[in-house]
Structure formats: C-alpha cells, structure tokens
Amino acid sequence: MRACPPISESSSATRPRNGARWSEQPTFRRPARRAITLELSRISIIGGGIGGLSAALSLQHFGYRVSVFEQARELREIGAGVAISPNAMHALSFLGVGERVTREAGPAERYLMRHFQTGAVIKTRWTGPEYFERFGAPYHQVHRADLHAALAAAILHNDPDCIFLDHRFETLKQDHKHVVVTFAGGKTYTSDILIGCDGGASKVRTCVFGDEVVNYTGQVAFRALLPMANVPGGIKKIPYAMFVGVNRNLLHYPLRHRTVMNVVCFAREPKWQEEGWMIPATIDEWVRLHNDFHQDALDLIHAVAPGTLFKWGLRDREPLQQYTKGRVTMLGDAAHPMTPFLGQGACIAIEDAMVLGRAFAAAGTFEEAFGIYENARKERANGVQLASRQQANEVQGATERGPNPGTGAEMRGLYSYNPVTVPLAPMGDVAPV
Figure 1 (cartoon, rainbow, N blue to C red):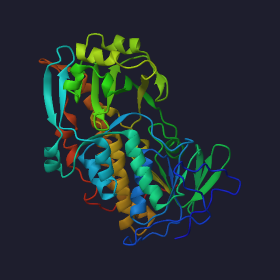
Figure 2: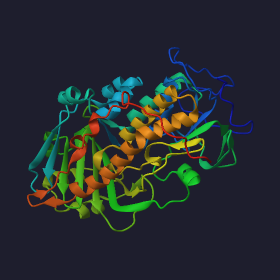
Figure 3: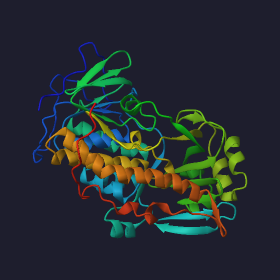
Figure 4: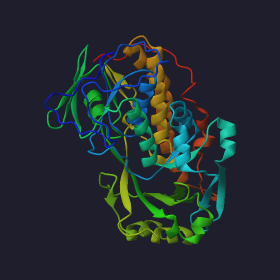
C-alpha cells in the first residue's frame, strides 16, 4: 500500500497539536497480524469528531491507512457529557481504548427518574456491575473531550500524520477511479474512497445525495458544567438523575470521578433557535422554562456560574435510505442524525465505525465492503434514530399517573447489540455515481 501523498505542494495543512510533525514518509504502524484484502492507498474521512475518529481507528486496526480532514484549527471536542453504553463499549474495548474510557469516566451505579415537581423517584435504572453481567460490557458517562482525546491518541499513535486540521469541506467530485475533494481556499485532495462523518448538517451528504431540509425539532437544549464544590446538597445526594416533566426534562450526572457535574435540559420551544453548539444563554432564560420544577432542580440551575451556560436548537434530518453512492459512504449523524433522548448518538456512530472496519476486512472490493456495511447498519441505525424521536414524545409526555419516564434504550433492547460480533452479510452492488 502506497504512502498517503500530501494534499498539494501549496497546501498549508495545520498539524494536530500532539507534537507530531508532518513528514514526506510518515510512520504508519499497521498491525502485523491484520491481513488486508483491498489495495486502497487513500481513504479520506471528512470530519474529526467521535464518528470520524472511530472510523479511522477501526480502519487502521484492520490494516488500512486513512486521512482525516477536520475543519477546526485545533483537534478537540466541544460539549460536555456523553453516555457510552455497552453496545459501544464492546467496540471501544476491541479497538484498544475501552480501558482508558473506563478510567476517565469513573463508576456509575444507578440512574434515577424523578418527578419534575415533587422530586419523587419514578423509576430506578441500575447501571453498575449488573450491566456488565447482562450485556458483557460496562455503561459509562464520560466527558466528550476525554473520549475524543482517547480516540485521537490511539489513531495518532498508529499514524502521527493522519489528521489534517483547518480543512473545511466544500465539495467533491467522483468518477469510476477517484474522489476529488475541494476544501475552503481551493485546496484539493484525491482519494480512492471517502467516508462522510461531518455531522447532522453534513455537507458531504448534501453534495452526494442532494440538498435536504435540516429541520428544527421544536426542542431547545441548555447545558452547563459545574465544579462539584458548587453543586447544591440536594443534588449531591442523588447525583445521577433526570427530572421528568411534561414538555421538559432536566438531566444531571457527574463526570471525571465526580469532580464535575454535567447538566443538560431539553424543552419544547416553538421559536427557531440559532445554529451552533456554543450559543451563550442566561439563567433567566433557563428558569423561565423550568420555573415549576422541584427546588433541587432550581437550586442546580441557579448554581451555574454566569457565562458558563450554553444553548442550541435540536435539528433533525430524515434517515438516509441509501448510505452509499459510488465511492462515498456516510457514517454517524451524517447518515442518521440522532436526537439525544436515548443517549445513543455517539454510540451508534461508534457501532457504524466498528462494522465498517470489519466490512473492509471481509470484502474483496470496496463496493462489497460498502455493501456489507450498509446492509448491516441501515436498519439498526435508522431504527434507533426513529426510536429516539419516539422517546422524546414519551419522556416529555404524561400518563394518567403523571410524567412518563419513557421506554428507554435498555428496555428497547439497544444495549444487547454487539458490533464486534454481529453477523455481516453481503449486499448487492452499491449505487453508481
């Protein structure tokens, strides 16, 4: 397999902030035990988030060299907490980063659903050792930055020169031999195949499958991180919980061995919210939507320091009915953008990545690999996307007995899926260009 060529002689790629230097003949640590079947010298991944890095690590594990293109100038993940349930932990452990994720996350024993007004416990979900016994892997709530750093460290260990920063995707063209990507500023890159991992508003998806509406869901989210020293006593006593209310819910759980409290809430808000994940918000805005919540929840809201609260509008696209066209396939939110109500957005992207790597290990052509991947993932991933929408209606609705805790990912059987061992079956030819 040939070394990955530079983008162009005139291109000024920004190297990742890991101390690595660009070199004309970078070291690539391909696992010796992995025999590759496809002679693909250039695999491009657009997007350096959790999905893109997971895809890179999976393909590297099976012997393939990749180039990851990220629009940011610095390799980092924004946001706060993310749930990594057993289905995703199987893949992370197989790919060699599960132990680090477990170490960074710290233990979580149980998760309580509380009535938004009375504070009474509606339901208890145990997430400790019995999860490992039932599903063969643990459940963790981890800071997104810690997960992202673990993935980045692993892929840069394999290939210090595989991440290109400050590369904003603009468009692509493909034919029967290559995919040519153009980035902002006119930089171009030619590869054999391309994987679009650029999120729910994916430009790769738009370029390949046509312009589609990205809908505002009518939900606004608020999030904040608090030092545990600032967390009110009532919340410290029940650190893992969700207040469930009609049209609203508020979730909190500790991160980093109970040194930081992650707080996120969702509320029905018909007014279109601004684009972006880092929109500053005020405590008054938050209180206005939750002013009838239990005092523990209100105390937590008021404990958030000014300037550390952010909001965003949840957006959605219909799931793709075809992930692949020609030499391009889609992965993660770019194929099936997830609302957060089942906590499965990152997990399903990690599943996608694990199955994609396995598909390339099993196939004789990239068309066959893409077909195996799509055949294994479309029903599963699209189904979870639709189930997450349903969960929003359940958990923000009510029954005759009061607020509805929802069916939940565990009760839907989502955690029983193992992307490392799930059978893979061939599929017909992928759609032509």
